[in-house]
Image 1 (cartoon, rainbow, N blue to C red):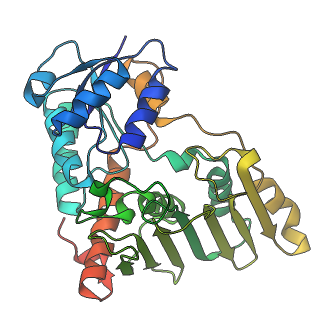
Image 2 (cartoon, helix red, strand yellow; image 1 turned 30 degrees about the horizontal axis):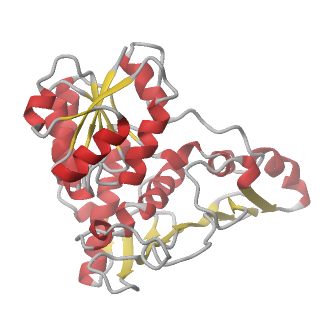
Length: 342
């Protein structure tokens, strides 16, 4: 029976979601919460009905804890993942491994030496609409892909119930949260780009960016646009693939922001010449949602047959992408990924 600790409740929305999801697995138990914000940590430990441990070293030294869920600020993620791996704890990370390629490679080395089960929760890879987009891409149903656009946004900076100030007073903003989903989906669909040109802005006047877009270039001439925002009410998720022989347009049927976009919540349109219509229709059909990363990670911890779909390599790729786009935004120039320090 895996005993799980929560390392930080910085993103309290996600922390509460992980705990709700853990309740669906009777074989797993959340036994402790640590947070560098003592007041926040104690409050959520009480809400989750578990113990609060203010000392991270003490928590990681506990032999009864099998794994940890890292739900920290983006800046803190790498150090918490690394120290947890060195302590021999299995790790499920929330969205990011690190924020630079060099940092990601260092943390990845610790994970590999520790021989733990590491997963990163790239939850939108299990959405039916994105699984359909992946099938359209890999089957060549729309010919050679020439351009892709992925958008993920909500009104966290401008809505009636704004995000906590810590989300908007940081060095890093929406691209390490909502925008990270766009980035890892792009890498999953298309692989590594060669360069990026990025613009980030603060519509609501906060320190962190809340409105941003990045244009990625690929070696074969393909282009990908990832755009994201905390300043958009009722903005449906969108994934668009355009090719030499058709197009696929998918996303949310409404602007309601959901953790899991089911087929009933989705909209799909596709266009192709008559000769390709049947193949595209088959590829674009919405499947059932994929298994959650949490479920796969818990199976791996218990030694059950399980393939962790999003691990170290995906985390490194996301860190590389984030470093390049922020460097582009800060310098106002195109950044080539080959120029980043490994």
